[in-house]
Length: 257
Length: 365
Ligand SMILES: Nc1ncnc2c1ncn2[C@@H]1O[C@H](COP(=O)(O)OP(=O)(O)OP(=O)(O)O)[C@@H](O)[C@H]1O
Ligand SMILES: [Mg+2]
Image (cartoon, rainbow over all chains, first blue to last red; front, side, top):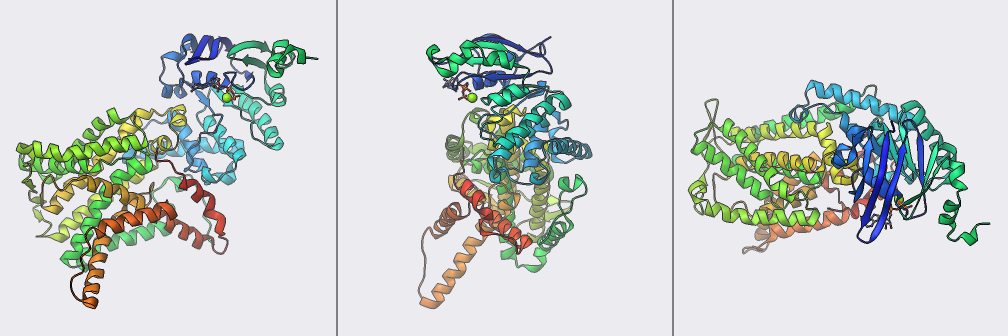
């Protein structure tokens, strides 16, 4: 069974059709990339999966469960984690605190127990910390643990955001343009990390990315979107050489050599 | 320069990060507990006043400083706590301990009720809605005369705890200790909340609702909880305020009090428990400082020096100065000095710059 099934999803904003009858399925353990020119509807697709946008029609299933029946805050509970195109971190908190928020769905203690800081809460906090430390080790964030986000450079913030999503212990990780704004070196690190996330943490990765080098290096399959429509799906090489994809990126057919 | 060596996760979780800080707070607490032996009745009353404001400040700090929801209506919740406590003691004959606890719970529930329609409002709109609530309160108190005594008001019933009469005038020391105990318990609970998932959820909805949601935080419920806890604490402060004022009517819990409370926590330092205490200290000290200055001026120039509205004027000037030059309030300024001393001689001027420029554009969304 596919992990994520998107079936005929249409999203409209007033007159703009951001997604039109988009269908595809992501298999467990895949690294699945979504490419497409600006405004193609890639982020909108992510926002539909996180239940921020309500689709006009279509179905959305995760591990057989109907996603459209869930509230936005219940999506993380299924094990779907995400990052945002324009980094959405908790600016005034430390890196550590940000990652700890990712543990929210693993909390067990009741509100009164938290107010009185019962022994069970203390044990839980230590366990959360241990889990977060693994993420910190994985992403080499040790020197920045106690740094406030507001003072961190852009590239590090992107890493922290991935870390926060990993703290959820996701079954599926959505990355919205993880390499945009990164230096070549940072981008190279990212490439290995994405593979490690799948291989060592067992998460399926769904990634929106413009950097074709990164996409070809890591992804098993690629989906190309243009104007809200699926125009190609397949291996990175096949999608890159697909005439419709070339047309979407270069504009007119005449431009194709 | 001092560096912290950490060898266990518990070090980051426990109440005080290191022995030095634990000792510092222990000394502070001992000093606070000894105040009735050191001060005369008048100054002790002022200290009690500061404590009550600090409790109310912590109530609002939780909501505004940590959960990011501005409220200009907290005088309304002070009123609810104050009247609920007095009515429960007077009419239902409850002992103080019971009526006091109940007053907090009732105010908390009222807070949740108010929060439900207000959940969709952000920043300035939420502030306006809560401001309206504060304005309404005065009328509601007048209208609910059979319960509240209307414009005549109520007299705070006598408190007896374990056989001892606790009275603001009769036994100011005992009343001060009562307020200190409440402040201490609220502070501990507040600290606990901040080091648990609940506190992190509050900060998360303050800084980014959208990613809080993506982390599995139910934003509406978290806001309602923030209102509930905040109003519970504010209700307790209101109950104590009733006993402190001795008599109270519709003119006590005005919009001005709401504004003063909000201004107070901004001056003290948004987003820190200490900020509530610093703010309360400023509220307590300003009138005394004015009195001393006035006496000095009268002695020097003769005649009487009376400037109407000077208290509010100074308070608001302070607000503007802090917003412009130190958005993190008194607590933020002190933290910077502390970091400077701890890192000495490695501190550079630019260390705080980025933080400051960021905070200048701080949205009160
Ligand atoms: N909240 C919204 N309200 C109205 N229109 C929107 C909204 N979000 C997206 N759109 C429109 O939907 C279309 C798809 O936007 P989307 O953000 O999904 O593009 P994208 O593929 O992520 O592009 P980019 O590569 O620039 O991030 C665009 O035309 C955009 O203007
Ligand atoms: Mg996008």
